Length: 207
Figure 1: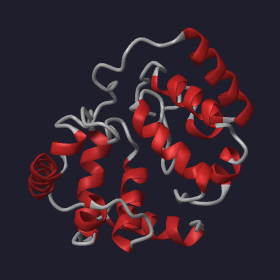
Figure 2: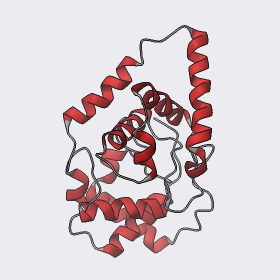
Figure 3: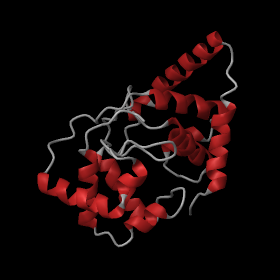
């Protein structure tokens, strides 16, 4: 399954409708409300500051808000399935999607806790593979992400492995076939090296 212009258009519409800003006090209250809701609903798994300490769970810190709202939209629509996330998102209104995405987009990028020391040989092999696959051409020169493209530099290595293996197997969905096509034919050990390289990239500032 892949998602094209209609998926992005749906998410873009949610973003666009949020530009009709309420008065400043109401806007500040709404931001506080969703920051509090993030702390109550999301922080247990993704970290209070968006830095995950939970195995196999992504850090959200530094993710573009457009990417965040698109993923929440896909979870709500059932086009991405991830157990707890699907259950949580299906109850969200359009305002909820915007509110949570804005909170996530404001979280400053930070590396995951205790990532471990990089293995120089694996980093070198992963870097060569990333160059061959043009990973940084889409995800940014420092893999910092942009709009609907996620930040993958400094992401948890175990989560990167889950995502990359899912794309390789065709079980992880994206906006189009690009990631599945890129991972097709990549050896399992190569995927491990790529995840190791990306996880140990210095965390760049948000674009």
